Image 1 (cartoon, helix red, strand yellow):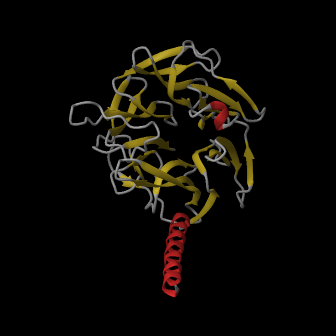
Image 2: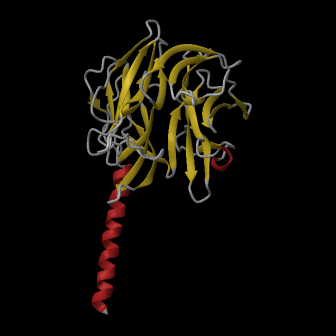
Image 3: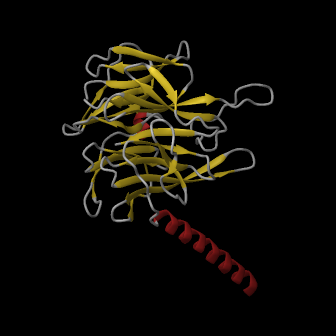
Length: 336
């Protein structure tokens, strides 16, 4: 009996060590490299999903941080002094199924070389343009809800306002803060296949009008705040298109028809001359030549599809692939 208890104690001790090690790795500071006028994106080209950056020509690629865990979501502050990282740990079983465990949303202070836990269930962070606050979501699987939050930065990170949107109210498509308005009066989020404007100061919600019924794949406010860029999906044809949208009447200004499916990111350059987006350039085939399908929640680093980052020149209406790799390169954002 004593041997059995000793074995149980040893096993418990080992599990405790593993837990503590993972926790310390999650909160330990790693050197961060952030360069202005570059493009950040996530990539699975290593053994983890990590954060990289490159210039707008797609040259001089650099890893931004040595991550101990997979980075699923990120956001860089406007002055490049802070970095928000939402970390996950993914395990795949022998049948191709996977389990994704959230490890929390962390705030890295590049100048002070420190890291703080924002929320253990935090995800989808997005800095506001002035850099004194950010939005993020917290999804509680047990309650079936995803709440949206705005965190007002202070020394203790304790001034956090919870908004009223709920996961069960809006369904599985509810994702917070796709894009802040430049004057920070509102931000756009997706729910039920549509886009909603959350008016921060008034604490009100307005649905974005659209001239016709389409599915929105990605959206972003222009730097002047006078229009929205969006990637729309036509259900009847399966085609996708880059358009500009008038936020007041929902009218479209057609820009570019995409020849490949969007992966869901769209980001305007600070000078308003370019747009970034990610496209699935090659879908893996099975041995019968059929396109492989993955669950909508399937993480990109586990997909064998080839996803690349593209830049769109608005004036010349030209698109260029700037990563052009055999990996999943996605969620691109400009570093101001």
